[in-house]
Length: 378
Image (cartoon, rainbow, N blue to C red):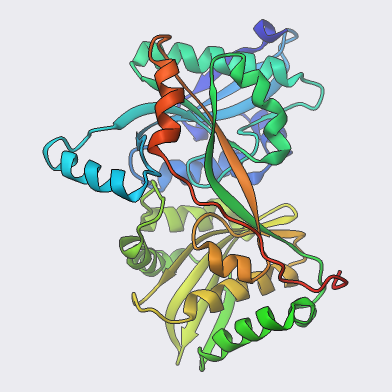
């Protein structure tokens, strides 16, 4: 069955046929032609994207997947002692343990699973055809590693299909989600236990004079929003590979239309920060945060709370709050969702070493949910 799926490769999202979206949009608008154009036009760094549209034996569209070349630090989650050791080595050898690899997924956000298929297509066929394609391209182009990302719990059933083909099922940073049970922001706060409600309100009060505005069509603010994001990015020591640009903000607002939203924060009429949001069906995705000054105050928590409020007011069923800055998101009621990657070397002799050394080189935090809400709050 798997050999019946035939791929057609495209090197530009602008060339993808409308049939791509029939499959992609059934899963997420972050797999759509429009979103891939945002990735291409956004000048994100070292991503070189391509796209596979798979056809069944009858010549009908069966599945879609995006993949890209990227240089990645394979010790990206290294524990502190190893990170210090690598810093010393990289003063002499800057690219030590940084490999150009082939990844399948989406580089800006995550999709689980990282492909979309017709409901009647056996996942075994998709995984087999996808593996065959990635393995062939990786060997032709000299990539040492293949990474298929990301898998959240609802896609963990795919693990045997990948491990049977030599992939190692490895841990990544968890995502965070807040399921929306409330019809108003006041009801959300009232559902919290007193400790978390008072903690949240205390931080909100530390932002006097701050107001927020939800906007669409923010192309004219692209330079400002990018500069705010860069201020946060240069201060962070957390996982992030993509480097945004004004072109990303501009393209995001243009191509994603009403689904692209910016939550703007003003203090005394000065724009002091923003949260970039994407409405994706029943989910509101929090993509990025930026601010004018790198100071240690409560603006981030204020912004996180307003992102939750916005999700409630937009009628979203859940808000994806993303990776990193876990304590604040957990205090607001978000729950961690584990993520797994499928990773393998393209040569048989190297693959067992990847499975052995990757867990040793990468140490990930244990993130536990918190008992934020009253037992009968929803």
